[in-house]
Image (spheres, rainbow, N blue to C red):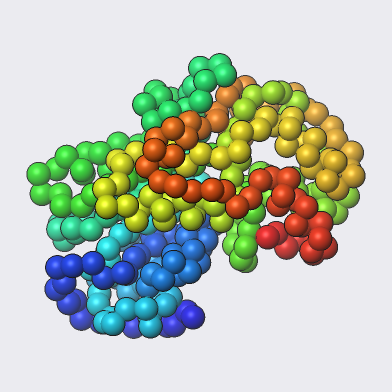
Length: 312
């Protein structure tokens, strides 16, 4: 249950609290992370991305207050999840991240930090998956925002005054929406909404590979990683490997709609010519997780629900 936030005193605690903070809880990824963290028996502080982060800033909500024996200030969160949307613009995004890093060092935060990034910032070789050591080569301003944020966190990690542990998780192409979140930037969801209403699906025809993953599996995978005793500094969250043509075909067959292939995609973040599927080698060496969804399974569920515009 979500309860209104209120001012509290800072309480010094030296052990785990079962409390986490989601920064950017008002974003697509952030809102889903809140839901899954609460389901995983965490007390969650939700912070907006609209303001610079500060430990003195009251959260916009508290979810699962009853899951903690105390109600401390956010500074004692075991983990901070950064889900700020890079579509806010490069300058604004980098300014926000710089302020966040300064706050972490100044307040001597000693917990964990999880930063949600994307495999899209890397440029892999043909038919080779993106591994954690693939060269970062941003193509768009959003890519550059994420790549710069990763570098800022690395600088912070190496600051002598830093006490926080930082884990960067890179994801592929998300789909699905379990709650009323803004998924306007999730191109799979956009295509599905058109297919549900009988519109022609229009996507590029090329065979380059992507990693597709339901938002539920993304969130649960991240929680698995961040629950480890020792977290990797950088890890891919792998998904189901499909081509863009595979996506179009599955949608067309599932909803019996027409398909049209386009070729104007050279400057599009989602459809550039290049493989972008993520290696899961390190992930599966680190945690044990079986995905609950495939794209086909999810689409079959949509058909059964017959709820146009409501994604599950």
